[in-house]
Length: 230
Length: 228
Image 1 (cartoon, chains in turn cyan, yellow):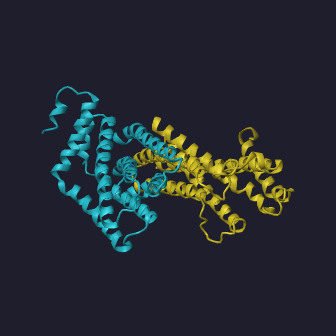
Image 2: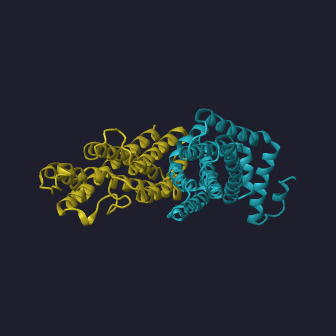
């Protein structure tokens, strides 16, 4: 259970280091369960408010509301990933792990976290706001893909924001304009899940989205080392 | 002096030409559709050319700064982004005035996919200035600013080059329309193409000139403060 032990033996392989760092984030999550449940509650109450103000909306409104809720849930779920690390602890990580390992472990962990959140909000949406989706699994797949993209962008932005002082507000200011294109693409892709026929050109958009995700990971790997050293 | 400043003279002459001959030269009348408003091409389109060039140069300086942290690189990155943002706003205004009459769209914000790209780039670079403003330490500010600049640029440019082409719009270069968002080379009169490129040259050089002056001002202030 003591994850520090992994570092003390002569440096393990990069994959092991990443797994250890993810394990550490996971353990933190298990020990401070209130943050996890806090986000779940945030998600549920946001959707409840949407339900109270909209009732059971038609498909296009349902779709856009879903992505807006996803955006806000993601900002809240991912924002803390770098902010929770104190200065001293960062210094410790700096001495035992590489920048690449660190950012990769954070990205993977947040993608997993957002995966759970995406599926949960899909569930709550279906329960509260009805289910206008014709191709349910296509929509579920899109929401997983979308959650992934959102969490990747906001993880890296949280690393930037942690370096500046006014973190929470900056996350939104920096993140929203960057995420708009992805949200537009996601909205277009997921719209097809509501129509009886899957339209052409959808794979092109999915490929573009996956390409963007790959680019975010590569950029994070290249740019994070500059944020890391002080 | 001429050897060093020829490009400033060129910028002046190009803009002088655009602002006089550009208004007088005979342009084609397309069955009365565009009328004289086609001259907006000499002003509106160069703004976007200028903006893209300045943002690219700004990112190049950000990369340079991360490779070798010199303050002049940081000033260049900041000032090119600033001039790019000014050009973006000017491009929006010139486009909006034109579209009010050509598209018959009286609303201030025209609903067209091309404008989403412009709005996103405006928001991203305004966020860049806010981010810089929120960091007190100069070295940190330059470094984190550079990282954000590169990241945002990499996210922005695929979207303003790819996304608008995928949706239908009134603006040139959408789905089903010929050419690219800038101009359609197969469907432009020679005189318009000529003045458009003259405009691109003139406005871009003017932007570089403004940047140049501001960077020099930064460097002088820095020198003064360092010397007490």
